[in-house]
Image 1 (cartoon, rainbow, N blue to C red):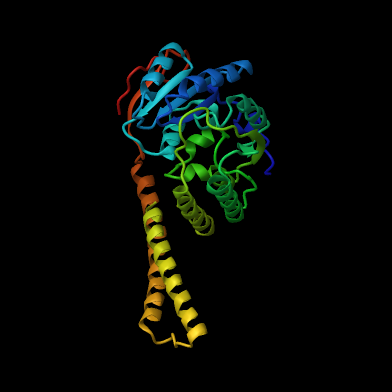
Image 2: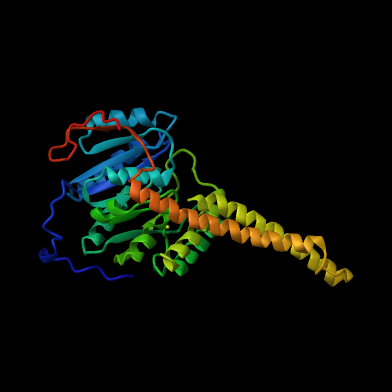
Length: 346
């Protein structure tokens, strides 16, 4: 793991003051069965370690009772803030919105289904106080499906380590970052899976601590095997960023992948015919078609990568945010920059 930076008053690291020490950022999408239990356990864990804190629950376009529960809890708890997005924007965008509404010295990113135990957050905070830029929780003895979750996760994490040279073994999930660093990240859809690699690529000091991985407290998982395809394109993009200098890539990448598979299947059939039946393949129309599909696949992937750079440049120049906040609810919290804010509409 990277060694922590040596902070000192000379570089201003301790000169800045933060309204709270810890900001918990948690996206919530149809988690009505988990919200209250998450809030209870998270508040107890942070109060037990004596840290000042805020809990930011981002309602990501929920269609169940999640928004009403967040409002109810925020009315009674000055440490709790609810950020309501105008519609469902996905986990990464919800995390990004929550980070931008945080004000803590440290920002903890975690899921709201209690597969990231709140009781283990203090261990990450204690570790980051040593001077690290990011501390990553690495899940031990995971109980999810071996075929659908654990094997794809092992493969994806191996590829991300090989691509980024970041030694973290579990890129996704529970993380604790320096607050100013977290708020400086420009996350786009899917990049929550790459946060350790992004921090490492900027020269940040990262480390990991073991955490448990209990099953969901209630409800159904929002993850499926389809996300593994998106992770593959995330890894390709990460390689592209690290080797060149940053999501049309999802669309063009899928087209490229299908063309590549079609071309490969055609080539395999032609080779089979040649080996088994001695049929010449070099001048046959299917052979020429397969070659064209390979070239088209390369073209679509290249187009996706080029568009990524253009979109990134446009967003940086225009200052566009990938989300719209419909409402923020927060109890009166003395010293907070938005104390007493009850209804903020962008």
